[in-house]
Image 1 (spheres, rainbow, N blue to C red):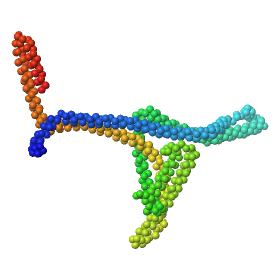
Image 2: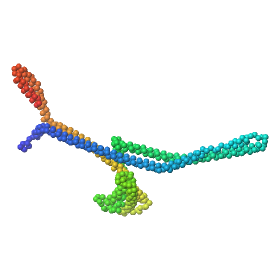
Image 3: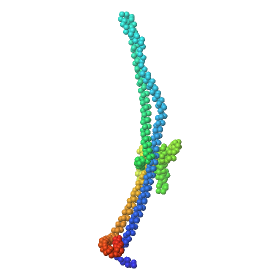
Image 4: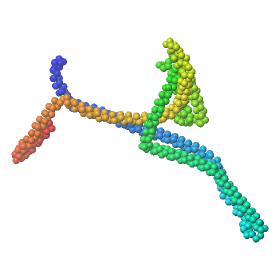
Length: 503
């Protein structure tokens, strides 16, 4: 039997395969479509699940973003109120002295003004009488003339003295008015300082109003507040990442500055795994410096990475700050010494390499190399304090990373949902495409089937067209003779026609 199958020609195998595929056409079509619908429904369910997860993540991101914005706004409002409180305490503490000084100056000015307003007394009536007597004509009697002349001279002297007294009084008034100018200037200066303080408080109040408006929007959870916070978080993320990259560069410079001297201190042949102990020691020193800087910033309440430190009392925080600063200063001094040691080791290495080459060893001149030595020592001392400020961008980076990760995760889930939906639709269309490809493979049997069905339809149409004419003639004869037989023949003919039509 096996030999018979092996002896069959290939074209016969092809014909058998076509017949088999043609006979299995309907179940294969159903299987392909069922499998495509299965994958389509599965991928759509997966897309719906991913979309639901994306919606929950969006809601969570919104809550986290609003909470972070509310906390930051509360901190800004608290700081603005602290500044306003400090300004008001400073000014109100000086207000009693300012009020007393203003009262004294105003009293002095009032007294000087009253004194400057005094007018010299008018001459008495006897002066008028003497003047009238002096003007009496006395040309006949020389004695009376001499007396009148004497009285006239006295009158002239009295008038001169009165005029001099008036001028002296006017001079005193002018001096009093001139003495009032510094008091007026002092009052204007004090009032200008008060006006400046009031203006500063008004500006602070406007800033607080802006923060309060933003805080109210955040509490309401409006879309505008969410967009503002999201854009602010993204900008803070990139800015803090840039500053941290700069800080990492500074840390690398610091590492290379002290790695060579640490090799001489702890040994250059000791390893922990594939890392030198000297490199690990230098890295630990830098990390400890950064940690001390973080503690200093936390104790100063510039950053709030550790709530425990912020919750400490002011006295404990001050002590902790000075302890961290002292340790940081000590480590900076150690780094300056290591930088000095690095310069010495470099000079020794140059001398050894010159001896190995057989060249003449030139002694280092102190006037030439002190610049590089001082620069390295300065860098070793300053870089630890510069790395202290890494705490500020680090806090912003950590706070904004949550938002950025949430946005990226939500976008990824949305992209996955779209991809799953497209894949489901593609699987459904792929099932239809496979059905069409299957039909293309067996196109010849399908063509024959279509021709056969067309021929049967034509035969059925012709039979249907001829059947009414044949059936009407016996019906007329049977109606006149036997009604029962005619009805039975008509029913038989209609049943035959109905049987032929479906086929």
